[in-house]
Length: 237
Image (cartoon, rainbow, N blue to C red):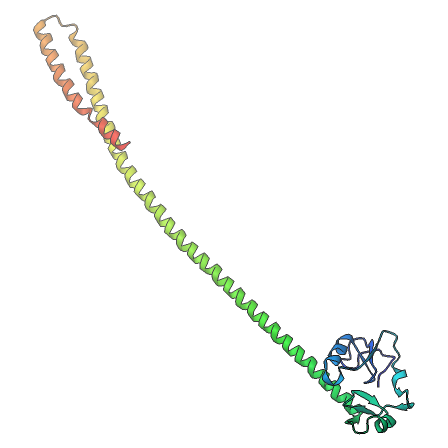
């Protein structure tokens, strides 16, 4: 029997019982009411709804002023003993308590089935999320590995180019040093020739002057051969 004072759902015993089933004489919360109306046996039941409902007025049959003692399975409504004889004589009747237990069991099964399906969906989503996150991690790892390989390849290429430049630089530096030394030697000889030339300017004897001029000419030819180092410099540059 519904308890008006508690106003708690008599099915889940947790939600507020703001809905009173006139046929079952029970208080339902909104969720259990929906499940109750989806059940084949009770889909035509009627409800009184609101926070101030008084289910006590529905405990008796208005027509015969008798307590409801049976539940008509065919009509889906509670009946008194007179209703059972007059209006539901050949109908499938059961005691209200047994009917309520059956209805409650059916509602409970529906709720548990719904919860089971939702839990299954949640598990699928969780599994899908885990799989997705795993795939993302694998893609990131693959990108990092490819980046590492590319970096390693680029580093090797850069090191190879640098090593080639260093080797060429060392070779060219050696060549330039050699050329510089050759040019310095040629410069010193040219200065010596210049001094010899200046010395000849004071000679009055024509024979000696001619001899000195020939000597200076030979020395000058030798110095011109050394100027070939300039071509080597142009090749390096």
